Length: 232
Image (cartoon, rainbow, N blue to C red; front, side, top):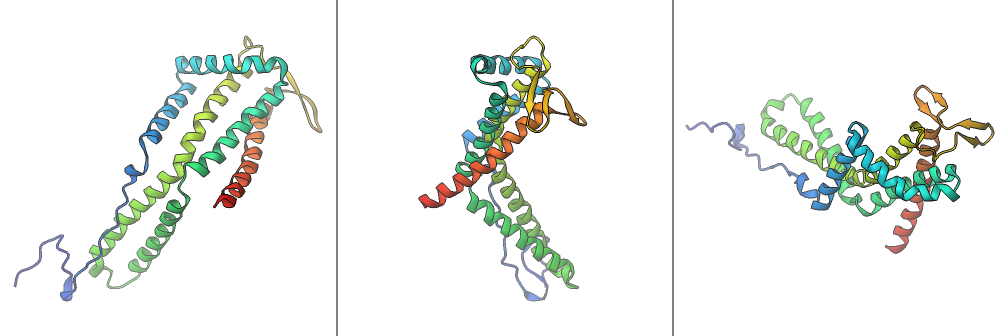
């Protein structure tokens, strides 16, 4: 009697495993535009360590924002940059992220994890070796699919957040910039220096920016969700 070679789908006891892994083409999920945006974000992020990139980004934003700082309170300008980041993040999640695909992948991951947990506790788990390998391969594929789908909006929002953060850090750490006032009126506290340390390395300007970004982003996500549900 011929013995089936390794990798043959024939199972012991005359059973045959017909289940095949549903491999997700993760690389196909990202369009050429997504990949170009990721490349741009990678170059912008390098500006934290590479001075020439930082100089180019700061110079471009200074040309755009310096005129605004003349007639707009600088605290409002920081709020505007934070709000722009929040709105961009909300719009990217709505327009770029495929919520249905991400939800299906997440549900599939949970199902596969439960299946693996049940198989590992089965005494006859060795008899299901082929199915376990196929399930693990599908689990890895679906996990990557969900991760890639969730990263797509983050790439586009980072294209706005990183330049804004680089510019603000330069403004508050370069005395020659002379664009930002030394202090700001903080509600319920009074005048404080923009570069005042609040907790550890966290500065006041960073909290001001993040507060505007997070609050505006939360409001923008609700508005976008309502508009999207109304249009469906």
